[in-house]
Length: 483
Image (cartoon, rainbow, N blue to C red; front, side, top):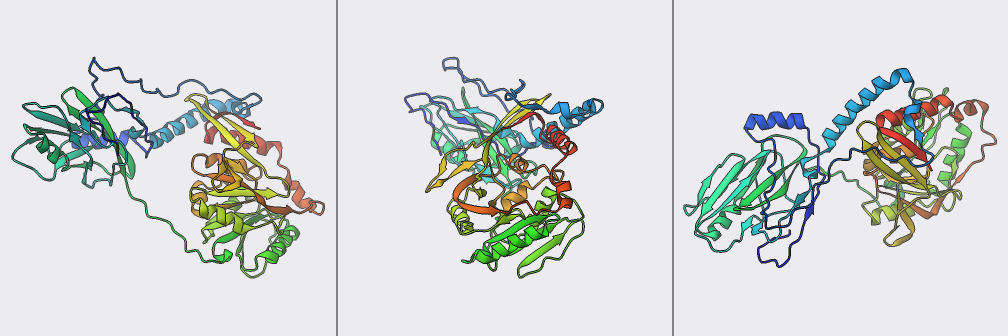
C-alpha cells in the first residue's frame, strides 16, 4: 500500500490503470436507478495553485496502419454481402467492448502533497458483501473542525463502529459525511467504513471519491467473485503428468508409426486420437483412446475434441506423421512449465524447424477494425534459468500446454484445413508462450501418403477466402500480414 501524506516534500503522480472485469452499461444503469445511485463518477477538483493533471488518454479513434504487404480483408467479402456483414460485426464489436471495458480502466491521478490516505491498489470486494475499506485516513494541519466526504457510484457505505464524538450522515447510501473536531476520531471512524456493492456482477468495479476541503482524490474498488482453483494431482511418473494428443485423417500407416515411436520411449503415457476419417479404422493398444468424429470435420474440431478428454495437468500436441526420437524429451518441457508457473505453453522443434513468431496488433478504429502482423522468428527475452528458451507469441506444431489454459481459449472449429497461428491469435493476451531448443520430434516422409488423403491435404482457394472472411468478422481485422 502507498500512503500519501502532507509531509511529502515533492509532488508526484501515481497512475492507476487497472483493467479488471467486464462492465455492462445498460445493466449498471438499471441497477443504479434501482438503488438511487448516481451514474457518473465525480471528477476530482484541483486547486488553481497546483499544477494541472495530465489529460486522460482518449479512446483510439484513428485507423490503424497496415504493415507493408498486408492483405486487406474486406477484399475477400463479396460486395453484395459487405454492408450487412459490416453492420453485424460493428454490433458484435460494440458488445465486446462493453463486456471488456471496465470503470477501473479509467486513469486516476493522485494529488501532490495530499492530506488524504487511501488504498490505490488491491482493494477487492465480493459482490453484495460488506467489506471494510482499508487504509483510509486524513492528516491535516490543526483546525477547529474536520469534515471528510466519501462517495461511491455503484455501492453503499456504512460505519461499522460509531462514536458520539463525531457526526455521521449518509449511512446506507452512496455518500457518507463524517465531521468532528478531533482528527483521531475522524480516522477511527474511517477505519470502520464498509463498502457494499449494490448489484451482483462477477467481475466489475467502482471508483470512490474521498474529499477533505479542496482536496479530492479517487481510488478504485474491484468487485470480483472469488474463483475456485483448478488443481491437478500429479505423480512422479510422466504418465500422470502428460497426455499425448493427435488428430488423424486417412493416414493410418503414419499414425501407427507415430504410436510405435512413442512406445519406444513412453510405454504407458495415454494417447488420445481424434479421428475424422471417411472410413475409420480401429486403432488398438494399451492406454490409447480413439474418438471417432463425423467425416472431414477438420483440424481444429479434432483438437477441441482431444483436449476435452484430457485428465492430466498437461497435454503434448503432435501431428499424426511425427516420430519420437531420443530428443523428444517430454520431461524437459514439464520441468520448464513447473519451474515457471506463468507459462501456459512451450514449443520445441520439428526436425530442424523451430518455428516461432511474434504478433503485432493495433486495435484501430470502430469502423475499419484492427491491423495484425505476424512476424516469423520474432521473440522476446529468455526465460530465467533457461537460456535455451525464450518467450514468443506462437510456436511450431509440437508443444506441451497447460490443459485448463488452452481449454479457455479453444480451437475455432470453423478452421478446418488452414489453421495453426489462429489459436495463438485468439490466445494473445491470455496464453504465455515459450519456445525451447533441445526438445525435438522427427517427421515422416510424405512419399507414401495415399492419393485420397492428398485430395484433401492442400486447401483450395475457397478455404483461404473463408479464413480471411473469418478474420474480418470474428477478429474485427482490417488487414493481416503473415511474415
